[in-house]
Every structure is written in C-alpha cells, then in structure tokens.
Image (cartoon, rainbow, N blue to C red):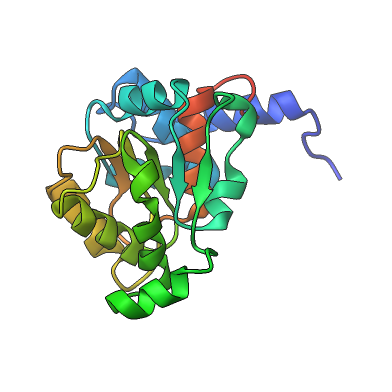
Length: 211
C-alpha cells in the first residue's frame, strides 16, 4: 500500500491541511494556533466556526503553565493526553475523579461523581489551568463554586461532550465566564483529546515537541 510514512512530513502536512480548510481569520495568530491543534485532535475543520473564547485565553494559559501552575482535569483521559515534557518541572496534573471521597461527596451534594471531583480542587484552583473534556456537570459545578467565591483559575479549557448538558454548560461559561479567560467549543462536540490538545498547544505551541 502507498501511504506517507515519514513522521515529520505527516505532521507538517496535517497542519497545512488544517490551515487550508479551516476558517481561522477571526482569531489572533496565537489563538489560531490553539484552534489548529484542537482541529488536529478531532479531524473536524468546521469546529473553528463554533469556538468561543476570550482574547486573552492563550496568554493567560501560557503564563500559568510557565509558572508551574496546577492542571486540573475532569477525567484521567485528559490527564493522560497531556505531554508532560512541555510543562514546568513543578507542574502538578490533578485528576480527582478516582479519589476515595468522590462517591460520598456526590451523594452529599446530589450530583455526579464528576461534579463531586471538582469539590476536591479547592486547594489547587487559584491560578490553575482547568481542562474539562468529558463531563458537563464538572463544568456546571465549577461555575457554581466560582459563584460561591472559590478561587479563580487562570484559564478554563472547556470541552465537555455529549447530548445532556454539554451545550448548555458551555453556553453558560461563554455567557458569564466569571472573569476567567476561557476557550470552549459550542454545542455537543468536545472530548478528552481536545481538552488535552488545548493544554499541549499552550505548553508546546504548534511546532516541535508536540508531534
């Protein structure tokens, strides 16, 4: 079979294809690079039309990661997709979905385990990078906790996916980000690969070690 076998060429051609097909004109150069990585993670160039973000999301995320900020992930799949060599040595990737207390917290607050896991983020939350790639309830509950006065993260990378609550949770974030820089994909689409790709875009940029 005839197919491209050279890794660097596959990488370069992939990003060339994304840039030639996606509508990136409304984004700054830095944000366009982030959107290109999101498209590369999912294979859908049309998502560029549904990206909502603040103008400072890339700068805020890069500054936080460069300082060694914690990265809070709603599920282990997001944490596993983060390329650690792009992070500061002291960076802490946190996923509390499997914490022994999560089930009890979920019962106490009357919510999902994903939302309960966010309750365990408090000590890490201030100045952190939040990456949500699975659970709409995690994003909803994070916003509820911010409304209650919890510390603000540096940036929210919001890509919960699904048919119940995903579009609504991201719409709430976009309508009222609580003073936090963010990037999200409106509607039902999202996923863990996109959330971790967003972190990697902030830590590695578009070229080099991210391939």
